[in-house]
Amino acid sequence: MAGILVVVEHRKGELRPVSRELIGLATSLKASSGEPVQVALIAADPARHAQALQLAGVDEIVTVQSAGDAFDPEVYEASVRALIAARQPSLVLLPHSVDTLGYAAPLVVRDGHGFTTDVFKVERDGDGWVATRSGYGQKVNVEMEFPGHATVVLTVRPGSFKPVEAAGTPAISSLPAPQVTPRSQHLAFEEPAGGDDVDIPGADFILSIGRGVGEEDNVEQFKELSDSVGATLGCSRPIADSGWLPKSRQVGQSGKTAANCKLYVAMGISGSVQHMAGMKHVDTIVAVNTDPEASIFTIAKYGIVGDIFDIGKELQNHF
Amino acid sequence: MKILVTIKQVASLDEDFEMRGDNRDIDPDFLVHDLNEWDNFTLEEAMRLKEGPGGDNIEVVVATVGPDSADEELRKCLAKGADRAIRVWDDALEEADPIAVARVLAALARRESADLVFAGVQASDHAFGATGMAMAGLLDAPHAAVVAALEYTPGEGTATVRRELEGGTYAVVKINTPAVLTLQLGINTPRYASLRGIKQAAARPIEVVGPVDIGLAAGDTGAAGSLSRVRRMYVPEKGRAQMIEGTPAEQASQLAKIIKEFRGEA
Image (cartoon, rainbow over all chains, first blue to last red; front, side, top):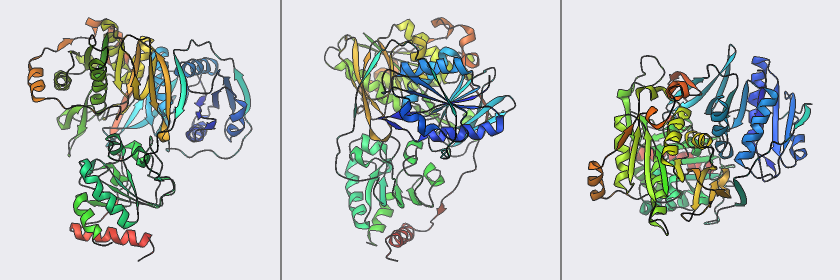
């Protein structure tokens, strides 16, 4: 067993950015293990993405031509099974994404590969692989090992590794698509109905509220506060799920990314992985939380341990 | 028809905690338990179907893999209207990873001949996001992950699900049933248990079985049925924000200064 197989992800005709991050991880592991890097692409029109995958450090691009482009868990499971059988990799890297959640576990449980998810560090240890993930709500790190498994499948946390940008000259080959009996059918993509015309990705100053607001009636005072300080009001998932603010204001993995934000004030947000994925890159993050151990303080530049209502009221007096 | 809802008693860390002697987990004395946040939504979705059109004959069975203490979480579900509760446990399951837990739950789903299986997308403690879909693989059942809306008429051969993708996009998928679905937060608004429900649930039976009783081979339980092993657990060195101390007025004044500097006013 030798080789590091990366399965890239695409949606609506675009390669998802995490794909190049996985290749970044794979090429750095190639340096420590000497194992070649194979990049697999499962798509209806592989030629469309193959060019973008000709990256430095990649030894081979293997394409599997699927009937359609929309994700189908059975197609991905069967295709990755065929890829593993053909290339016999010691390590398979998949993005820790919504699509992968749908097929990685069924694949490994049937084929008996070593497996863990949402890893942000991968190391070579002798002949084996060791992967690190978070536990207990990100309070601890956990090193996972995979004794007795010739092939280890890992899903990798997006945003954890530097994407490869430099071009390379990998060999290109293809595998025949395996036969799959469909059991589900992609009907359509949907964008949520825009609740209001707020532009989270475009905003340079965001004041975001989370569970700490407690109840719906309290949202209004933070709307007023964000207006007076000149910020765009954002929120974390529980606020949008409760319908207290429209989904278009949700910052995070399943919401919007604060792409152009320079100042982010997080009030009453403890900081889940999913929320932080949408804002941890912001230059200046100020977090206000009653819990001094809240995860958000590990990525914030400034922290205030305190009650968001007290701080909010006092802050209002300055504007 | 029958809906199996698989739940988990999750653990979070006390303010102060210590590692277990082997440094592979936390000393259990320092763990605080609760029902996984996602499981409030999976149970509610099952109850929604049961109480909706054509749902009269739906039996909602809630199941978990865990020690005695997990009964508390099953009772929370009984209090909200689940018909039956099952707990599977054996000391051999102590070292089970999510895959080994899925083997137990899949065996149970098979015994129960469940028409639909609902699991949370992930659990709030370790967030593997693997158990539900691993169960689908073992059952060789149609499956969809991260479902944020479900349309299903009891007895029909297909369901329509809305999968929540990254960046606020959804995929609408038609799926054959019986099926295994992992459900996302926000798919519904979970109810609170009534006082009467809580009282009644306290007296309801919980079926407790061992993995072998439901047909699992000894070689498939716990560490033997796992695809990973914890080598070491540790508290990472973390970045730490520069803390703004003082009274709320003083803290807010510093924050105001940061905002005004950003706005070019200071």
